[in-house]
Image (cartoon, rainbow, N blue to C red; front, side):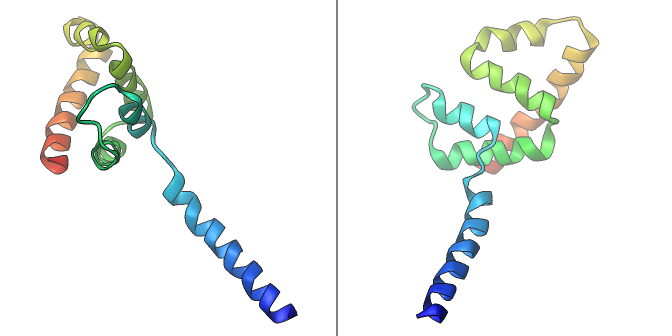
Length: 104
C-alpha cells in the first residue's frame, strides 16, 4: 500500500512539473485570444506569440498587445516621429511578415 501511494504521489509530482510550462500563456497569445477577432484561434494565437517571443523584446510585446484593444495606437506609433517609435515600427513590421509566413 505504501509503495502504491508513493508511486501515485511521485507521478502526481511529475505531472505538476510537466504541466506548468504547457499552461504558460504569453501576453500576445492572451491578448489575441481575448480579442473579438473571428480568426483568433488558439493555435494561431499561440503561433504569433511564439514568433513574438523570438523576434520582439518584452517591451515591444507589451506595446504590441495594446494594439488589440486600441488599433488607433498602432497608427499613431507608425506615424510618430520619435526615434523609439520608428525603431519599434521597423521591428514590428519585420515580426509581422515573419509571423504571417510562419503562422499561415
